[in-house]
Length: 366
Image 1 (cartoon, rainbow, N blue to C red):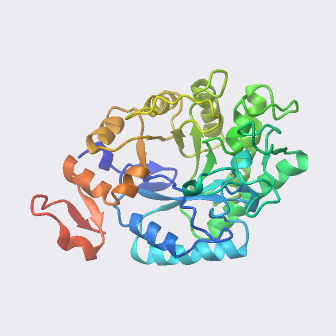
Image 2 (image 1 turned 90 degrees about the vertical axis):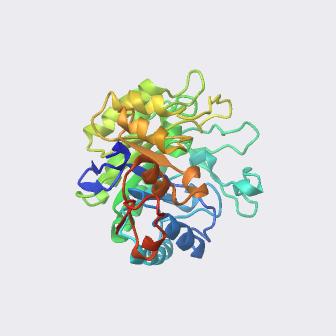
Image 3 (image 1 turned 45 degrees about the horizontal axis):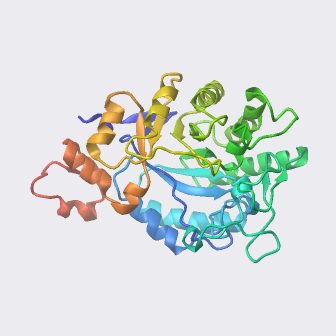
């Protein structure tokens, strides 16, 4: 069997294969509440044959959204809206579902990407005051964030825990904490954005402190038998910034606390980043982390071909691969990968009759 289609254990959860659908923001929520778009979008991906589906970043507080159209999970209304979508998706798919919990920090309060993605200043329609580790804006011309004080840190930490409890009520199989792509927890990790002089800034130990406190709060709030994982940027791609050696230290600290998997992406923190984009460009980061921890490691980034994905897991560069834009373009990518690699994939009975004659053993009924 192709390694990509071998089962894998994440905590106490067994995944049918090693294909992860990564979280992808849709910017289609209303006041943080999921809409019918999410039912269509997630319902389609839940029929893809992947090992697990990760719901897009759900902000733990209104000011934690990237845009005013982001999904949230901070009150009864956002919880109910998400529950309605999940009820529909789960009626037709038993694919495990993960939820990414997030706070955008200084990268919040923006327009949607197709509207330009620019920051919206506080006081303007759909804008609000952002917060961060320090009062340094993402771009110099932007309205600066407020540095979180002790009360603010407690408020954010408690918000992550509250959202984790809501996720548990919704029956989520996994929580992923977003500590990547320049958002709030990454802003604490990187010396480029964290200029604090208290116990949360300066040394690596201090910069790890708040993200680890958030992890501990989420872990305590989510059922002990269900996995909690973390997504991290392996490097800022900027000299003097967060790098893979610091990522390894963070991964080891997370593993010591019981973290069940780590998803290694990169970048997003600083506008001066120089990213050598190309196939597998982030895989070496995942490989270095995997060499240093025993928990499963997920690689992501321009993984588009079945043979490419198989090579990543078969050679031990990572335990799983994640796809995002690839699966938006081709929502049946896992089917096509199984066909190419001589594997089998579970499909809903409604689709059994579309099995190609050239791949007579491709499908098994879910």
